[in-house]
Image 1: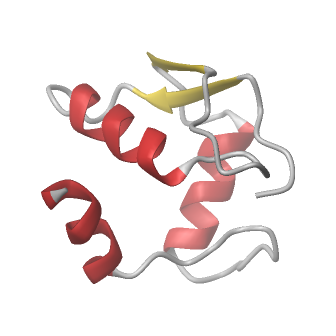
Image 2: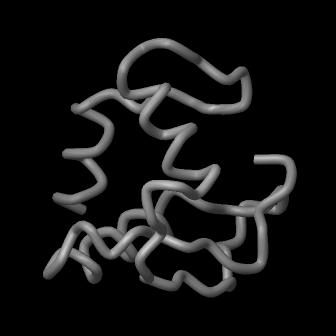
Length: 83
């Protein structure tokens, strides 16, 4: 991954899953030297009018596929959760 931000914000929509989401993201995010990412993951309400929500909805509805979004297969996610 070229540039990992210092802070990642996740929508609070997934109540009770914060720990699983954060742990999985930390396993996925490594810097160029293959060290674990040390940034912050915050959970807050994003809101339906935010650019992040609009982009996520377009991607979900298959109307847009940004070039910088990597598709992760279900098997890949399950492997991370079972490690």
